[in-house]
Length: 379
Ligand SMILES: *Cc1c(COP(=O)(O)O)cnc(C)c1O
Image 1: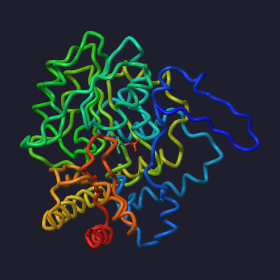
Image 2: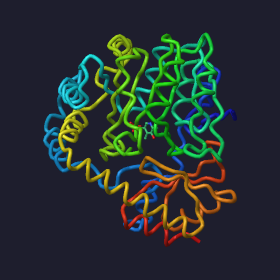
Image 3: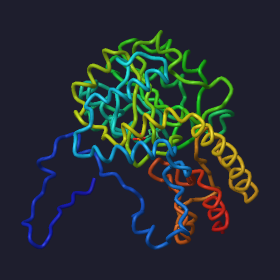
């Protein structure tokens, strides 16, 4: 990685790369792609933000009301245990409160898992084209990454998806975590409950299997429900979820995981005491209670995604099958020019070069107006 020394006029030169620890030396700062606040002022209402898989319907009105009320309590630290939200989740999921941990987004929990359970002696298994946080969490912990080649593009049900058989075979004696995303971002692909059950039967109990279900609330494929259904049989199973996607609360930063109480206990040792703020805690609990709003978000996304896929296909753009709120479109050529073309017209999509998919663009399902803006902007 290129060494860079930050130097401003009033500051003497200083090179922190000699001081940084070995794991951080291998990482790079998050690249947000574009300066979104600047783009919002440039394009105003004419922007179409289809780069981050947000829910265009936003939070439930009940969540908004609860959050406005919570602002009045902003002088107080939030509940460090998040007890009310945990109780609401426990009832919602029919699990014991002791099996739940809360995070400042599920991103934090994915990182915390590696920090707690992995170090330089270990290896961590994840898939090629798996969620971007998996390799970051691995590197930050000092563990060795075992990146398993994805299924081929020609695969019938999960092109570029997780190859669970190959992943099970790549587990080594020092492997401590396997990260799976189901459905996966950025491919949108998934595996069904039976495939997960067969995978878990092959994994030693000493290996934590983390199933990231960030898009769980959107799924409706036959045979696909949730990894939580087999949690009782597999104490090494960890399931992460988020309020950032179907619940429309990405800006609030709240996620959760369900795991064996002993695993939760270890995470609690390292978790920042006040990691979830009081507005997010109140908003998430109220959002859970508003089932009709979630049903509306699901129905809207499903109809809009399939409409958008059809419109894109008519224009010659092929998209992978998706159980999420985005489509991965694979072009016949490098996608950088198309991304630039759309960007110049205020349509923000996510290029996939960083994932090793230079011919692909990830397009979130936006509002009908945003999706139309995208179609209109296509060359
Ligand atoms: C969006 C996303 C997350 C959610 O991250 P938060 O930190 O909860 O906002 C987690 N995993 C995957 C696969 C995602 O796409």
